[in-house]
Image 1 (cartoon, helix red, strand yellow):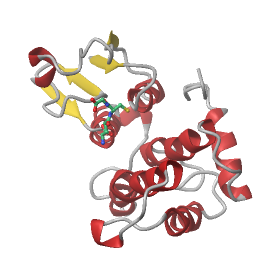
Image 2 (image 1 turned 135 degrees about the vertical axis):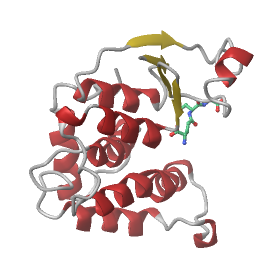
Image 3 (image 1 turned 180 degrees about the vertical axis):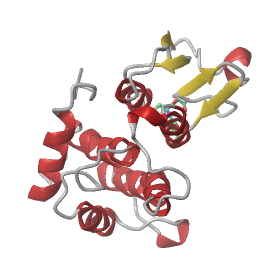
Image 4 (image 1 turned 90 degrees about the horizontal axis):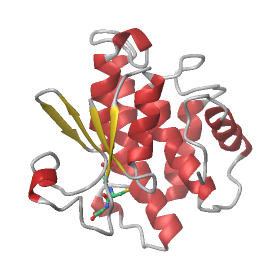
Length: 191
Ligand SMILES: N[C@@H](CCC(=O)N[C@@H](CS)C(=O)NCC(=O)O)C(=O)O
């Protein structure tokens, strides 16, 4: 497998997921300044011209959430996702999509000063944060003691927020971020 990577990009999340899976992979460094993500070769891997992108044999996967879903299913032995048919599967898929469809744009609005328009499909960060806090409950992870790819996707948004100097969050979410960054495979904030 090849991960197209730049350390200052969401590819860090895909790398975290690969490491949680104990996968063997090769890093292909991509320099944004050189436009390496817009070359015809790269656009054949990710037509959106963005990182991350993963190539696994004949399979080409783009979008961070899709990469995490793909890896969780491929490396079933890592136990990072409920199996198809398991009762937790629906909530797991919902959280995976929620991370990128609502949490990420809401956080972007909050961090970058954008106006949230609910018509666009996501709520304001305060609302989204409450949803995540509710889903986390007593934790320690979104599925209790079970760390899953949903923690990689959702947790990395709160890690990113901390890295960018967001005001301290609610204690439960701060403790969640502390737990995630303590994982040996987790990306080191600011590294
Ligand atoms: N929703 C996409 C976002 C990908 C994205 O915007 N990646 C950024 C880096 S974090 C990028 O490649 N930007 C370069 C560009 O758009 O030209 C995902 O999660 O994969």
